[in-house]
Length: 197
Length: 197
Image (cartoon, rainbow over all chains, first blue to last red; front, side, top):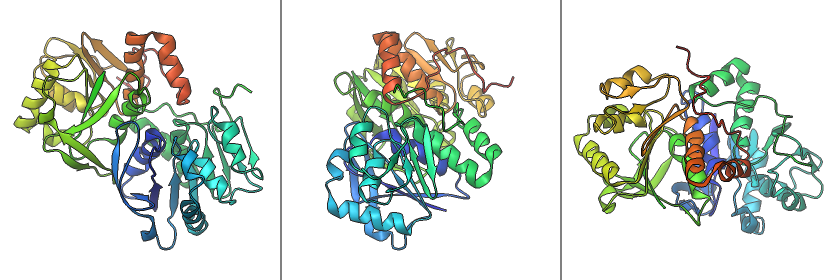
């Protein structure tokens, strides 16, 4: 399966690289590539600078389209060209996974309207304004609605990605990946110790 | 504090970017930069390609020198030029943090001789051959010996980095960072559910 990771300026480091660690190590089954609106180097406030391909190179969607969050989303929700690209690629992709405030970008396309979704807890109220017709689930580590997987804040993206592997390959496969990276996977997507409301 | 992250071909994605997420978001206190032996783009099998500066630009060590692991360490332990640079920079740095098989590179310099250290569980026996005079601690999430912090596999690097923050800023500071990234921090460094021996 192809995994297309969207990057934009000031993406959140772990939102992207947590899931990339998990998909990336399964080289027989998953092939990860990074994309951005213009291609080239994309950086963030953590000092990270990553090489990306141009989003236009994704011609018929991706098996998996991964959208991280980060402070950059505050600007990118108003980037009509990017939102249009996200809409088109998401419609054509088999699965769309968002992490943290990355959900705001997908919500903005309208594709989550009438669907269940979550986002991180600190920016939750802002994210929900980007999709007033989404059925927002505040208390959730991650939420699955059809082909759309949305997760809570930053680290929750790893739990969601393992949950995705569980749905595709079975729970023992996912547990084995978690063990290999010595990750304490929170298997229950409905448990959310970071939700205080 | 300056955080110099060493990269080399086939570094493990999360070994580097887990700690980078944690230090990187504390922009008032930590400044993260990436380095490699020759500078330029450094890639790995996960499809990641990151821009780095040349290690020679680190003139008098770094406050924190972070060494990730990954399959690339199998080759790099035999790269005398790199090991010499790691030795020099580690001697000059205030703290040296290694993640997973990154410990093998530091062990190879001899600087861990007579010190306590750990590494990931699957490659543990190989890593220990790189430092026969190190006091290897198999059962540990991470180990602190003076200025040297060494961690178990991949995800353990995040727990160790939060443990480092605890030692510098106090446990409430570290817990607050963990909460912000919705990370279930394993606070006890001696607990190791991935150790089967």
